[in-house]
Length: 346
Image (tube, rainbow, N blue to C red; front, side, top):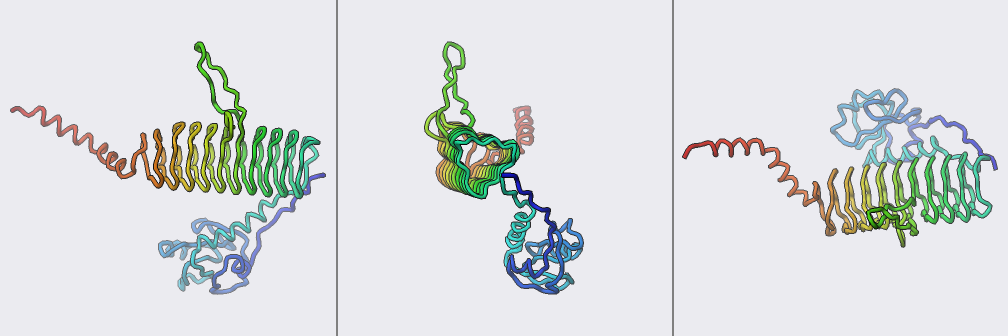
């Protein structure tokens, strides 16, 4: 099958059409033509933008946008408005429609793709140039695999998933439904496991797997290592930002979020609905309870109880760390006071 290329799309909506997507009430002309979306600062004629509250009304009054999504009628605006309860959420709904049109995927298999005869390919699949699908791979329905991706032997990709360019999915990996994996990520590479024997590093075979749940999104340049035995698990709804590293045998609970440069060492268990901020390091073989929040740049060296909010290196309760940071800023003053006291003759 040859790839069917999608025609280029030019955005063009009436305000009434946008209102039918996001809801709300139109003030002004509903037949205004909108051809672009933009922030309030950069919007120009024929664009639509939004403000979320009264603090941005001043910006709205000088914006060049032709229409605006607002939280209440702004009579001084003198241009068409759509009034909704939550402008940001409503604008996001419209952005989703625009994105589907703008990035509409092709359907079909590129002639340069190499697909094993033993692989199973679902309906409505798109497979790009120079993709390699190994033996006994199972690709679900409506999956999109962009160019230069490798899918290893006996791996499975669930329905409606999107695998962007240059991703490597190693052998025996299980990927759920509606998963998005961005460019240059590696799923299922060997975990970093070695024994120290006679002063040398002896590799421990990594014969486990990786299992990724449904509705997961994985950023670019992410590595998720296969388990030494058993499996590395990424739960449903997990979101992992760019340049993060998940080591072997890690388990991450549903709906947890990892911001860029998160580093999770081996055999760590992370609960559900955990928020891990940017550049956090978590040591091996500990447990992070459900609903924890770990502040940016923290290093976590011991287990955390559920709902803990921590920050710092080593990570500690956030209020304690804040007090320490205040004292650190006062150290020069404290030092000078001590120095002056010690020089005072008795």
